[in-house]
Length: 83
Image (cartoon, rainbow, N blue to C red; front, side, top):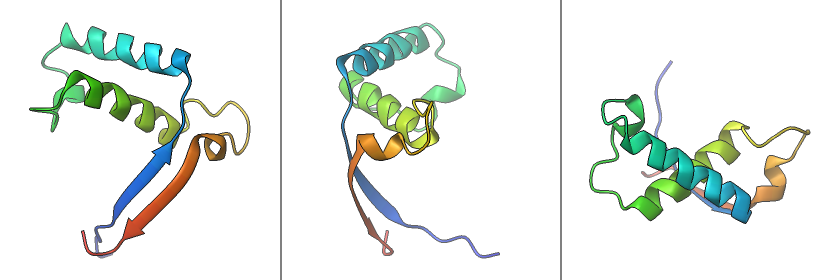
């Protein structure tokens, strides 16, 4: 099987509660600098890390306690095959 690369941009919505949970998670990760969480995150701002965490949870289904709930958060998705 051949691996392919696609660049995708998501437009998402999130609640204040989701934002605060993600901020708390990032704060907790600061106390654990050797965790896998930090791989590839060098040079990112705290705000970028928080938004990334929200997107990760939405896309991975963390917030999906009912079918199709992710679709309520994902407003738009644009993809291109030349990444």
